[in-house]
Image (cartoon, rainbow, N blue to C red):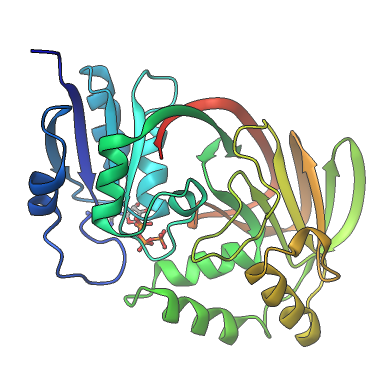
Length: 293
Ligand SMILES: Nc1ncnc2c1ncn2[C@@H]1O[C@H](COP(=O)(O)OP(=O)(O)OP(=O)(O)O)[C@@H](O)[C@H]1O
């Protein structure tokens, strides 16, 4: 009998909107048992998944599946950096930006089919002030939204959109000094987003030209925002036109530094990271194995 691939599922029981799907039962039913031998573990707290994934990689598990949203994907993937194990995703979050970028189906049957039939490739990851990210990081408004969302009991797209609509009018831009592609830029900053993948999730394309294997960050800068620009920005995000939008500027680079007079909020993969006055954002080319369609 040929050797079966070891696979571990790491389930974040708090991810995404409430669902009646019995994930372990579906895994038992649909996983290709001739190809895989599996186990399932659950996170008990934020920050638990990197331990679980790293321990699995050290024990010779070849594929580790993040069952959750981008925050869970981030934690599982962090534990797999510089190991031989590959990340796979069963999307169960609210946004699922990395899964959507990699064209992994949102439904559990389709995603398990990819596990059964997919192949392994290697993608880039990013770092903001030493924190790994795989989808997007950012400073300013998107980080502020992640900080408010983190304290919100309700999840899901509707809650997120309501929050953005409520906060966008009162959030203020700040002056920053940035260096992008070696060019110094003194500018106001409402939001500066750093993208490895093309979208925040929910098909909101902050970086429609992002290539996850090119070793480059796609940077989207919105200096100031008024109502007209906000409408243009939303439209361009949903129609993949942000690279040429009037409301934003778009760059590709390996490295960005930003300094601010006042502390600014930042996030990595939608998880709020705190405040800082200096930011260093860089790419780690082809640093993570992933299982893709
Ligand atoms: N058992 C747990 N209890 C509480 N929090 C957890 C637990 N396990 C993981 N977490 C935290 O939950 C955070 C949010 O999870 P995740 O991003 O998967 O869901 P989501 O926010 O609903 O989805 P998305 O990011 O796609 O919008 C993770 O960043 C992680 O730190």
